[in-house]
Length: 497
Image (tube, rainbow, N blue to C red; front, side, top):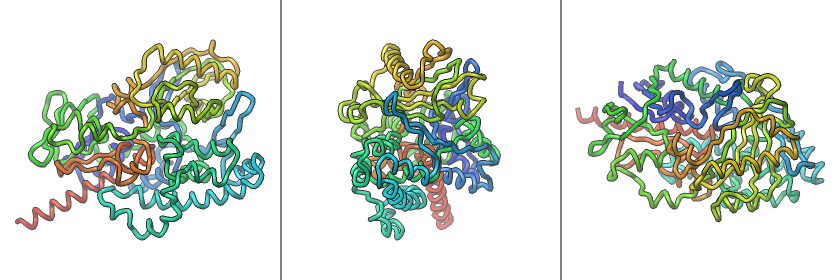
């Protein structure tokens, strides 16, 4: 069997490992931390358990499809519950909106806020459904290696319906006038990493995922998915080397010969890099084997980084599982991320309180609170900056949730320097590349290295892009490309015999 190294045990790395092991390869996942998960690791402290990164379970069909490739279902590993309300939007301390699960209930809510908008939402979602199924069944499975991929019959037939050259901002505003409804439909863009004016309308597919497919939660936390994928990988014969940092990718004239880790050379026939793309290229590869230079990366538009607080509170707080604090100027915040990068004047932010759904997340009568502020990548964070924003955010939360500052019994912060230290994240980014038109599909960094025929990339900096479901698909795409190259080399070898 050919030996494959997968660098990194995040979603994309675990996905690639599973597909390659199923195809008969001898797969080893090398992970710098002492457990799998990457950005989706978890930690516990003082009886509180926190998912460190992803907290939204959208697109349940992607998880179903992944496990189905191996004769499994998510239910074989974890229990899902649908959240209803899906989330809460706080427009001010006196104006909140709980978003009901399902399109019919949300159409009624839209109608109550803006007469006539309920029918328009139904029309909007019908178009978003087409985009969702074209994107998730065709576009995201393309390796992005040829423009011919974009001219498939299915994509061409649906091209006009995709509104590729229209922004989601203009598309939404053609139908809706209420600022509340506009914000509600644009908010998933925060997780795509670009201003609504620069995000293609194609990504209204996220609204379909949100409204029609629902917001779910795996009991025990998002790390349950990681545990499931790692268990599946082990059952397929994948080996794991934890607490092992790859120090160098060792190369011959046209291919990788192996990896150096812990001062030792480990031979491999193929390598799949699920670690930060920029780090692998610029730090682990020799200069002459890099596909892109530093100038290329500097020109890329990165999605935001994040300032995160993990907080344990010894009382119950008036929150839902997911909460969006839109009680500040989004345009100003977005400008301070993308146009004039700086620490934000008055940011919007997101709060997850999974203890509302999961009794195991916090001690009885307590809450675990995850606060995330999207901020520009490349900023210098410091204890003073973190403390200042902690004070700002808690003060704003208390206006809506009631006093709880004196009940905080655990507090940990996480920002740029932590993303760099833990994940070698380029400029401390949290979400990869912004999904602008010029960074979509084939315009992302390639999954292959033309100078090395046995190196493949996967994860949020390549196709199809950031987010948990896209990263799971990215692992599958990289594995399929590796298998294709392997078969081609076998045929070439057989032809020379």
